[in-house]
Image 1: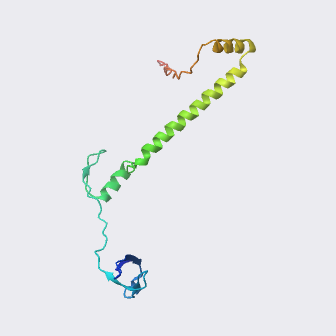
Image 2 (image 1 turned 90 degrees about the vertical axis):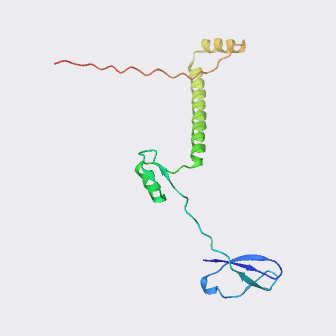
Image 3 (image 1 turned 90 degrees about the horizontal axis):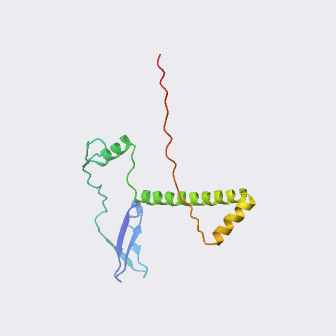
Length: 150
């Protein structure tokens, strides 16, 4: 539905969405007076100028259609700034989940520890010794292969 602009003698300007069939109908301002239609240029949406070489295969990309085809061919998606925020949110959630898992593991191990050992640990901690969990990744196990000669 087209947008038409109107100006009233009282100085007010307003827009109206009207079907083409009501194009010639008089439109009233809020003050009650009949407003005059203003002729304005139509709004044009111009597609961005695209010209680059594909980072995947070096082909020249010179249109939006070629860009879409290049993205599809390389299984990529257009850059979205929210992707970076989503990435950081996933990392933060992963770290919170890991922290929770560590706390649950420590609590479980403490509850399964023999009473004497737990009392000794508590005495050491109350005596000023501090304990901080340290994240250590285990080295990858070497793969052993056996070659049999016929």
